[in-house]
Length: 277
Image (cartoon, rainbow, N blue to C red; front, top):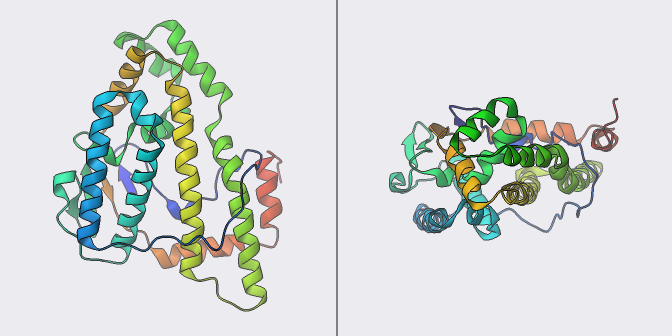
């Protein structure tokens, strides 16, 4: 779990919220297993490689950063591995050189100095959809935006609902997983933590790409100069955050309880259609 000085919580066990779109994606695949946590040495090498990839794109342009599918997936896979290592209490190498400083049972991160752990696309999806443009607009204009650029941002936010975009891809995964959990219950086969992780891994990968795609669409409404202004505006907000392990057992229990609700599928579909229960 990530916690920073502005609200950003990577609550991966609460990935059921926000069903507001139409389902147009593949269902949960039981055969796709979530990767196991790597050794401390392997994770250090992976973290260094990712940090180097991030630095190369950061030196290029904000558009390059958010348009790179490879970098987004590299980031997701590494975070997944590190989360599992923290939860398993594995012995890790010193990762302070890449910004992960040991703190209690997790890490303290200076996001301003090491933005690779909270990249631009994540900041955009975390903050911009709920940020009042009557506040952000004048501040951006003071930095070099034009009224037409503010209008372009407003238009994109009004016509591209992020929650709907995520829901369109993740609802079938959740419904498929719920059906499988109930099938397991009927044959008295415990679903188990590995199956839950498989669902969360598949859903997390899809969500990461949807958010990246949304961010790329937004940034491409601006020219390069304004894209750099937007980047500097948001990235200057970066400060210290904390990355702590989740209570896995409690999270798994809570998630399975939701999936076992008799009317879970109907509830999810109603929310997807915006139907009030």
